[in-house]
Amino acid sequence: MNLNELTIRQAREGLDNGDFSSVDLTKACLDRINERNGKINAFITVTEKQAIAEAKEADKKIKKGEAELLTGIPFATKDAINVVDIRSTGGGKILDNYISPFESTVISKIRSEGAVMVGKTNCDAFGHGASNENSMYGPVKNPYDLERVAGGSSGGSAAAVADNMCIFSIGEDTGGSIRQPASLCGISGLRPSYGRNSRYGIMPMASSLDTVGPFAKNVEDVALLMDVMAGQDNKDATTVSDAVPKYSEEIKKSVKGMKVGVPKEYFELEGMEDETKEIVMKQIQDLKNLGVELVDVSLPYIKYAVAVYYIVVPSEDSSNMGRLDGIRYGVQAEGKNLYDIYAKSRAQGFPEEVKRRIMIGTYALSAGYYDAYYKKAQKVRTLIIKDFERVFESVDCIVAPTSPFPAFKIGEKKDDVLAMYLADVCTCPASVAGIPGLSVPSGNTKLGLPVGLQIMGPRLGEAKVLQLGHAIQIS
Ligand code: GLN
Image 1 (cartoon, protein in one colour):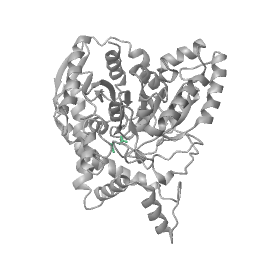
Image 2 (spheres, rainbow, N blue to C red):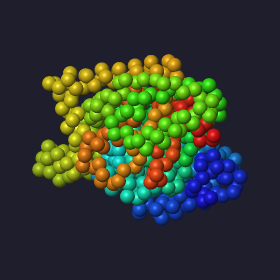
Image 3 (cartoon, protein in one colour):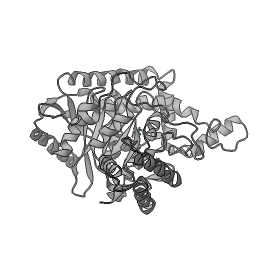
Image 4 (cartoon, rainbow, N blue to C red):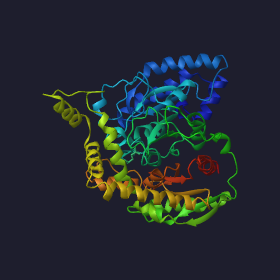
């Protein structure tokens, strides 16, 4: 096995036993990036020199016996997450020259353990998309088939882990941007509950839905990363003070007797492909071999989740995108006057999809339409939240497909906006409700494309979700 293919647990053991150094491990990842990134386009920025310097520091720490969980382990992060003194474009040309003066809390937590950052990954501009085709740095290709998308918006982070360019990565999930690319690239990825991990330093898209979470080669690694990332942060007032369980211990518990809800509505959502449905259903039936009790449950309102999402998100988005104006940060276009500078900077610096969201959001929030769209969407959002709360009174977790279909061809949906929005049908419900969702590989289609199973839990119920995901992977 090549070093870059290791999991966190395996890399930790190897480093601590002196089988290899962090420099060896980091070089293995950088070699893989040099070999493959030209084809996959997973990285916008590769921080090669800094990575080697960080690896040397990590090796000193390991030698002194001071290693923590992530010391010396190479990772990558989505470019929409700020890392101090590193170019952070967020996938949009308006920030092409932006060097972040500060760092997101989750990245600081990871780096303060001595993890080695190998680079910033490609993503749909500021999180807008489900295929990475809205990145202004070109689409990310799926490692399973280079003619297909890696998913979005955190497609670069997913492809980098799936293609062994790093040991783990960090992404951001508003409507599915961790779960869907994890599913399409055949790896594990967790969207935590809203408020569990700090959003400080994440480029905001829709502030009441944005979350930040890990991608890894298995659920055990996801749990280990959540041990490091989760918790209250005084820089993010929406983080909660509830105690953080030791996820890596919780996952070891038996799932015997766990009640797992199977909501039929997910399997009837628009665009759900038969092959995906069959692969996921088969895996759900196999859960019985783990001693899990399957319970039929009903979530009648989730069919409205995409509609709610595409009103609430653009509304918050139109405000968040307002800060990118060519004056405060990033690239400023030449213009005759202030208005002209704003207009040209934004016209050149945003892709079509971001402009579309700004227009939809501005419209939905305008005085004449606020009640008809925004307020109504918020009311239905509450019904979806209540739907989940009711179901979680009788089950521990819910299982469903992560995506209605496997990776699609690059270009296939790009010009059909609604078809692209429907890529989020299975992930939007948990996003709108603020609950956690984990995607784990469930099987492959006849064409060899990965399909993911989505495990959801009640708010702050990550431990049970990870427990079930881990039990599936070690069975
Ligand atoms: N595809 C969704 C969107 O375009 C997901 C975005 C996200 O989670 N950042 O809004």
